[in-house]
Length: 281
Image (tube, rainbow, N blue to C red; front, side, top):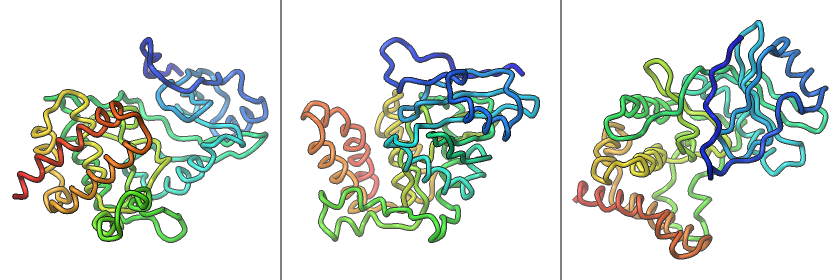
C-alpha cells in the first residue's frame, strides 16, 4: 500500500530525533503487526516534538499512524493521557486502535488520516473548517471522572490571584496545543491530533490559542478576532476574562524566558486581547 505522508522538515526545523520502523524493538513491531497486519510500507512522520518513534504504516488492512516513546521517557504520561481522552474525541480526531506497553516501549496505534497540515493563512478554505472543529469540541460532552483532567487554570496558579483564576474556570474539554502540526485538513473538514496535554476549562481558551496561530500565519489581530467570533463561546467572553488570560500568559512567559523571547511570544495574545477589549467596550 502506498502512503502519502508529509515531507521531511525544512532545514533548521526543530523536531525530536526519530527511530525508524525497522529499528524499533522486534517484539514491539510484532505487537503492532498483531494489531494492524503485516507492514508492507512505512514512512517516518517528522511533525511533532515529543515522540521518539512516529510512522505511517501500510498493511493489507489499511493505513495506520503509530507513535511511541521508551517507557522511561518524560512523555509517557502524555501518551497515557492521550489514550484516556481518545474515546471522547473520535468525532474530531483519528480513532485510537490500541495502546501497547511492552518491551520497554509505550506505543499508540491510530487510524491513519490521509491529510495535510491545515493552512491557516488569510483566505484559506481551512479557516471555516477549523472554526467548525472548535465549535464541535466546545459543545461536546467532556470526559467523566475516569479521566483526571486538570483545570487549565491550575497551570497559572502561581501567577494569578484566586479571583482571576476563577475567571478561567470551566468544564469544557480543551486541547491546549493547537499548533499547526496538530491541525489536519482532509476532504471538507479539519481534524485535531495529539491530545497529550488536555485540560478542563472554558472553550474560548482553545479559540484564543487558535486565533494566535492565525496571527502567526499572517492574520492581523483584528482579522483573527473576527474569525474567532464565529464560535459562540468567544462572543460571550468578557473583558475581565480575556484580561485574566493575557495576564497569565504574559507572567508565565516572563518567568520562563528571556525578556525578548517573552515579548515576542506574548505579543499575539496581547494584541488579540486589545481587539477583544475594544469589541466588548
